Image (tube, rainbow, N blue to C red; front, top):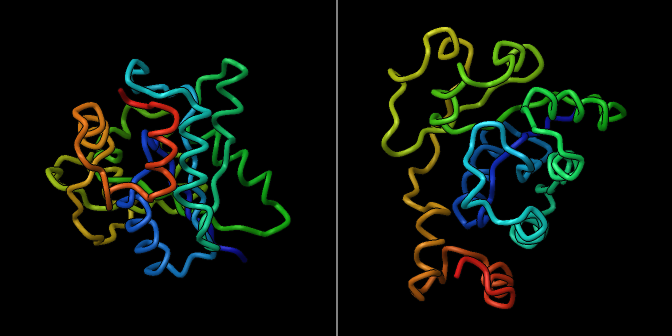
Length: 198
């Protein structure tokens, strides 16, 4: 049985922190691979600051696909092109179908800030039935803020507390400040060449 971690996000842009956390989780859980899924049409997030999907997908591929244990999926972006609002539960069901020949076990990797939001998610209890929900600590968020029902079912992993955020990186780019070592050089070059976040 293959063990696949599923790591979704807007990746706006994908930064070195995403890679560090994914590798840390992969190692702790002995995952065969981590699949990064850039969001398409997000059910809960404001779309105003969200860069168009194709750019985020291209950057994610540059950021992650050089690692043999990492993969990038456009499954949610393809749905968004059809005007479909995406829900994580639907993505996981689709992934089981896509990888059925691999006999996979899915580990849904989320930050504790996402787990706090679980009451707003579609069919959150079903997520625990079809995946093991892996929760990463994040600066500024407490386990006490998680709904007890979800807190009991989740598996918590201690990962490096990185003060790196896509929001901060976007601000730095707008202010012409350096993002060296925050983005992979290939991603930084893509941002510059496409005049993103200006």
